[in-house]
View (tube, rainbow, N blue to C red):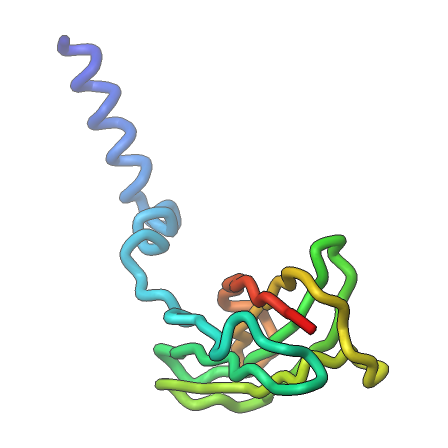
Length: 131
């Protein structure tokens, strides 16, 4: 019993030592990106658009990348300065070449970046496309 208590104390000391408490900070920090959704979902590519909405807890740059399920990049939108609060981006269901994408599920990756371009956080969301 004393050995278990000793091990727990050592573990806690290591976690709270200077330079070693990043693990604890990561679990308590607020997410920069939250409440991702797109309306409507599913939507008809080429006939209508969907609005990708997300909430930022801080001002930052944002990149929204749409991937197909194979992992190929379909299109990317970059916003250099997004304000904290509700943000949105419209997508018409076309790829970077202007062609209407196929029916199916797509992954929307939203990446928040600091002023230096370093990634702060990334979050994923599924988008369904119908024709």
